[in-house]
Every structure is written in structure tokens, then in C-alpha cells.
Image (cartoon, rainbow, N blue to C red; front, side, top):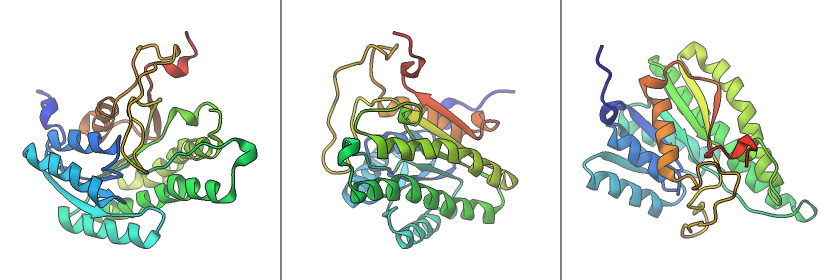
Length: 257
């Protein structure tokens, strides 16, 4: 049997990338489109979403922008309905929404805690639920990938609320995969290490240049590195992989340096 060429392995799939205007979500959306998928970019920033759409269309792909605020359950429902209409259904979801923000444990406020948990954890669950309901109704299976972080596995100074949400997502994938298995829906997490490009929730993205010694590959991961893992999991190549946390960190979690 001849394998499907890498450039076509997502051919015809209808994929929603929540947070697809972000520093990680945009490269994922571009990679999905480059491999033949039809893509909806769902993002709280209409401007960033449209930038991703424009880049995909300029490269000859199909993409649509949808407004979604994962802190608002009504917005999640409306956005997923709009995505379903635009694509004629949903075969896969990538949830790349999330916020960070540092504060020492003695200085964390209730507002800080609630904002990070509302977006990173509660929002993630209900985005996944909304997409999974569409997939279950279609009866043709599906794939879901959430972007987490190596912070799910280790502590980081000043990031207790953020790390708590990523640890919860690490655990949540097991229950989600179990619940959705009867619908032939696979659920996995991909956790990048410290990225070369930071989040751009609150402004333009910035580049990091310092590489910690613990990163064995001697460079920081890019959005393209994360996208390769995500597209594998969404494709038939990853059809036996579910309930798994995969890390794209250049060996940083190994503790060897």
C-alpha cells in the first residue's frame, strides 16, 4: 500500500482551529491548510484571525474567520455553529486558546486566578464539548488536539495559576478520550516547551533568543515544530493515538543537561 503523501494527508478534512490567530495557532492553521484541509480560524481577535485567513487564501487554501470568546459560553456555541455552517461540518478541532500572566504566589489576585482558569480550562472544555457534539452527531468520528505546555509537568516561578490549568488539561485528556471513544473521536494534547515566539494575546508577538541549557536540541521550538505534531495527530497516521500528552520541548523535560 502506498501511503498518502505528507502534503495531502489532511485532504478534505474540515478543521476548526480555536485561537488560530495566535503565535501557535496560526502556524497550525497554515500547516493544516497546506496539507489539504479546509479551515476555520476561530479567535477573539478578528484582526489576527483575518491575517491567518489571508495567508491561507494567498497560498491557495480555503479558510474562514469566526469570532469566538472562550470566556463566553454563548460565544462558543455561536462560533461553533458558524464554523459548522462555513465548512458543512467539523472533522477535527485544534484548541490553541489560552492566556498566561506571571505573579508571585503571595501576589496572585482572585481576578488573575479566575481569568486564567476561565480561559485556559473552562473555555477549553466547552470548546471541545461544542466541537465533539457536532462530530458525534455526524457519526463519522473525529480528532481533537489541545495545546498545553510543559508547565503541566513542572513548576515555574510566578506561574502557579497558569501551571495549574495546564496540569488540569493534562489530566482532562484521559477522561475526554474515554468519554468520546464510543463516537470514534480521538483526543490528545500537545505541549510545547518555552516557545521562540511568545503569545500575542495582549499585543504583538515577541521573539526569545536565550536557549536554556536544559533544551537538548539547542534551540527553542517554533510554531512550525508544534504544527508538525498536531497535523500528525489529526491525520490517519495518528489514528491509533488517543488519550496522550505529547511534548515538543527539545528534550527539556528530560532533566539531562
